[in-house]
Length: 142
Image (cartoon, rainbow, N blue to C red):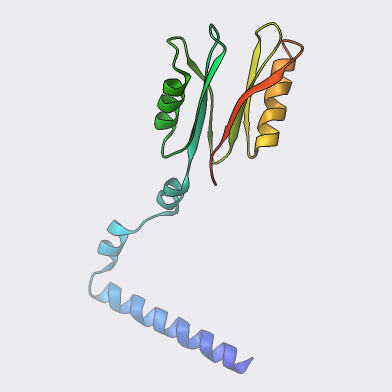
């Protein structure tokens, strides 16, 4: 216990001494200007995806693991390949799914995992139609 206290105290003292030294020579402004905050760190780990759908051709386009929502949506529309493709759902560090019903109704959803996204998309489709099935899905790495 005494060793732990001495070790903690010595590390705390060294940290305090370095901080005091930095303040005395005017370094805090420079450190503050170049620091990376938690929001910047989190953005670098985010992966986006999207699902686009064409009602006229019943085609889906999906994207995943892209660095921004705009990139994900653009790729999904490109993958869909039809002039009437529309983004139905986008997601970040998760999954998205789109389901279609027997009468052409659609439902879409996102979740933290594939099973949740599919379940929610089927539920949304089921509000409007019967015979719903998952048409397409995608997941981004986390």
